[in-house]
Image 1 (tube, rainbow, N blue to C red):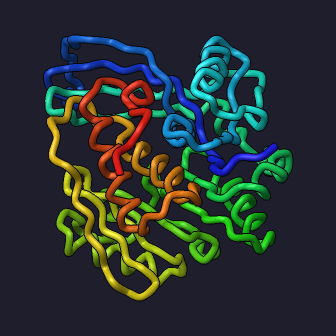
Image 2: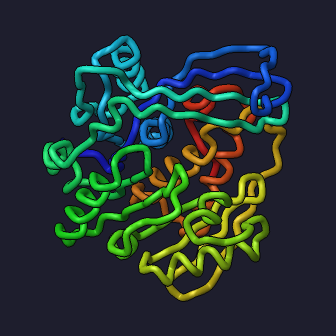
Length: 306
């Protein structure tokens, strides 16, 4: 078994309602459209990398239910290696998503089978992790499982790039985690919560946040700013701002995952003779294209422009 990109993470079935305005607490609103789709941050990132041509494997758990059956077929159809996707008795993960006319969303996730991702799953994926070039993590599975995988990769002493996407947001992570990570990526609200910052809105705010992440021990701190692009701080301490192309957003669900998945694909492609900054620019363009269509994985493009 081998894959250049391995994603350790979640699978969620998306139950998506489109509304003119997001409901307030206690309010019922009429929707305009309903869709059932495939999501979960881990699977989204794996599907994005696979759609762009990376040989991609997913390490995940699904329930032995209809949602799980459908998800397995979806992953097969887009070319994701599912040899390390386990099935358990019980329910698969689901995400209830509401999207308004301004393309803003709110999401409730119920982890289901994702909560059963454990050290045994990582042990079974040892070979595929060992032969990878880029391994991606998020926070819709137990933190202890992420740490087990990160420790394993570090112990291999190989040239494997780790990307840790600290989403959904958390207000604390163990100090041990940061030095195990090459690229530590958060969005504005995740940076605020994790770093205890009042506001991360501007490029200057993001630069400060990226620097704080670096002081915790990761090689690179990265903050995504939605339509304002990405800011990252390199080991040299220099802050780089990469803007996004301007597009008319219809549905921003999964855009952050499109960015992470495409960046993983680009970093794993040894034949692509482009700078890191240029690869970030391309990943921003891919994410921008994804928000011009409804849906999550269904909105992801299958190519990029150099």
